[in-house]
Amino acid sequence: MSRPDTHVLAERRGHLGIVTLNRPQALNALSLEMIRDITGQLLAWRDDAQVGALLLRGANRPGKAPAFCAGGDIRYFHAAALAGDPTLEDFFSEEYALNHLIHTFGKPSFVLMDGITMGGGMGLAQGCSMRIVTEHARLAMPETNIGLFPDVGGGWFLAQAPGHLGEFLGLSGHVLGAADALAVGWADACVASHGVDALVQAIADATAVDGVGALSAVNPFTLDPGPAPLAAHAALIERAFAAPDLAAIVAALAAEEGEFAAALAKALAQRSPLMMAVTLEQIRRARTMTLADDLRMERGLVRHCFHLRPGAGSETLEGIRALAVDKDHAPRWSPATVADLRPSMVEAFFASPWPAHAHPLRDLD
Image 1 (tube, helix red, strand yellow):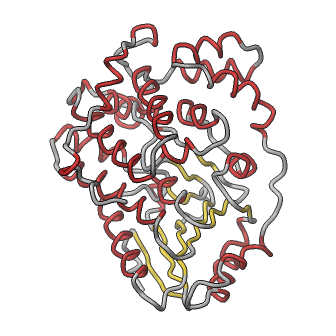
Image 2 (spheres, rainbow, N blue to C red; image 1 turned 180 degrees about the horizontal axis):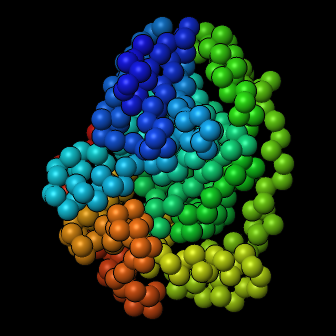
Image 3 (cartoon, rainbow, N blue to C red; image 1 turned 180 degrees about the vertical axis):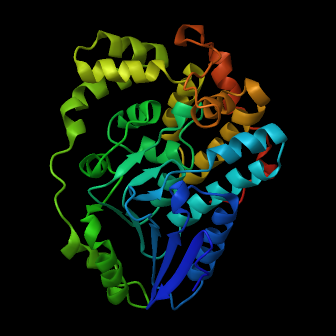
């Protein structure tokens, strides 16, 4: 059992290992220390013959909206990048290795996405065998809002979404509730939030030493979240986001009628044109990649986000500044418009900073 003052709690309940993200005042946003603690615990349980299954969940504050994990600590990203703090490099290398570990854990794994699950939280969740949402679910990959791209394996799991939903979700950062999460393949089951503690105990009771029985324990708790709101816009999304490039997507949305298309066009107009173009290329490349290759690509991309145009020239630092530091919500993107984009700007992000033998994630398979 972990100390209650740590940001990652670990307990064994029968043959079930339970990891609780315990930073509720920050919506369980990930720090480097948390990533290291989770990784160490998962490696120990992966190799422990007495652990049959794994469950991830987040701690909540009484009376506050719940969260599994809101992502990485973006204020740390901003401060570390400006200070030249080398731990920023460690953060992404170790986070992406942890994402891969969850995908390849080899034992049944569960995640309780009760509330906000975004960015780095999605990176933890999407590799689990059973991804469980509640009626409070708010799932998204909103990185383009801060001049970043959907990392943590986002290129790979966005590319798995039906049709061109991946491009839509990656570029827009659209937030999904429980029904939409099930419909797009980001969740496997929905349960009532008030029943999650009973569900965890049921999973623990059902988990044999070899993991048999664990997944079936969820069935009695599942409920129908109702119709998926996004389904009404499926044809529009497919028409617009199948377009060959970012300029064509923007033009396609402008040609559509209705409030949904107008709101979507407005949202994209507020994003970094450069990082939307990088995201589009990332997702489309990932369609022909393994998860490991996608994570290696993303590791190069994220280094370029902070180093290709260092300091204040970085789209990512500018996006974080506008959202979370100065909070003026007025990022000054460069280039400022989609029309000013040049292909060479996007291509530069996909040149690996390392030869294959020296890549930080060279050992992933």
